[in-house]
Image (tube, rainbow, N blue to C red):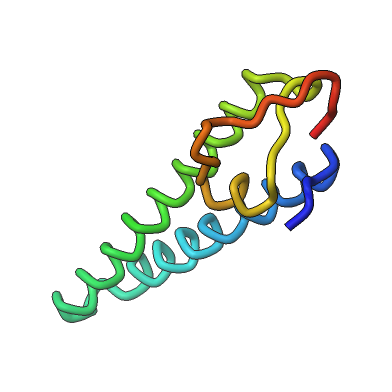
Length: 99
């Protein structure tokens, strides 16, 4: 996958934030509006909330790392960026190249 332009990264982050937030909102509304749910079903919904919260935390951590590196120093592959993976050599720093 090719390197992303800075604006593409912002769009990708927005999408990556919205996905878990949508799930968190939907599941929390289901739990709020259905207090009679059986315990097993409630536990599945709670597990989904925990999983989506972990995903959201990962996205935010990657955003903070990207921001700390600065747009003129950080080069990223789209897959690495969105999924939190890094090449074996660590973060790819690209002097004078915007994301």
